[in-house]
Amino acid sequence: MSISDIAPAPADEDRAAPAHVAIIMDGNGRWATARGLPRAEGHRRGVEALRRAVRNAGELGIKVLTLYSFSTENWSRPEQEINDLMLLIKRFVREDLAKLHEAGVRVRIIGDREGLDPEILRLITEAEALTRDNDKLTLVVAFNYGGRQEIVGAARAIAAEAAAGRLDPASIDATTIEAHLQTTGLPDPDLVIRTSGEQRLSNFLLWQSAYAEFVVLPIYWPDFDRAALEEAIEEFHRRERRFGGLTARARA
Ligand code: IPE
Ligand code: IPE
Ligand code: MG
Image (tube, rainbow, N blue to C red; front, side, top):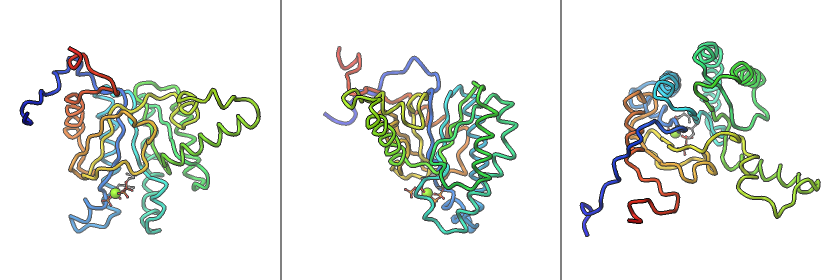
């Protein structure tokens, strides 16, 4: 049997966009360095790519877009770079919140809020409160987010309920865990995209990505545009999702 004997995935009748697309926005620094620019310029251009991604996701009919903007491990970067990133995040919310609200975007932030800059905390709270009833697109921003920390938080909350006698440990199942994750109520991502060619999750949505299709694009995040998003979605449609079972074709 040669590689050409392996039948391609069947043409997918349903070309609708995946309901939940999650993106690891990576490569801002390398984008800048390749052009002899400071890394901060890469991050600034990264925010423009983020704006485009939100607009395009809405137009393509994606219902949930999750963007990894800052990980719990990113605090280990130089202080100046962290300051640059925090400034950009604040500026983004200040400048874009009204437009996002007008466009029917519901904003939700996941990640650890403890110890955050009070101004960022205020902006996050305001963004969520203002847009809570919107339903065109849910924009989930993973900020100071770590998948392991999220699972640890869920474990702690569940253990506390059990210790208080409100929960029988034997009744704990996947639904219990999901109810205690920060993404509770959201569907799992169907498609996880990472730019910059790196093939790893870097602590992103560890639980939720169990059966997501993973598409790695070679381009750096500031170059991510409509064509790149469409390319990733096309690749998603070429995949055959099995969820551990057999497809109708394999059964035949
Ligand atoms: C992604 O770009 C943005 C953040 C992680 C905040 P990077 O800053 O990781 O860029 P590279 O990977 O160093 O090129
Ligand atoms: C992951 O990118 C975090 C974000 C995109 C916010 P990193 O650049 O931090 O990941 P590593 O260090 O290459 O794994
Ligand atoms: Mg990186």
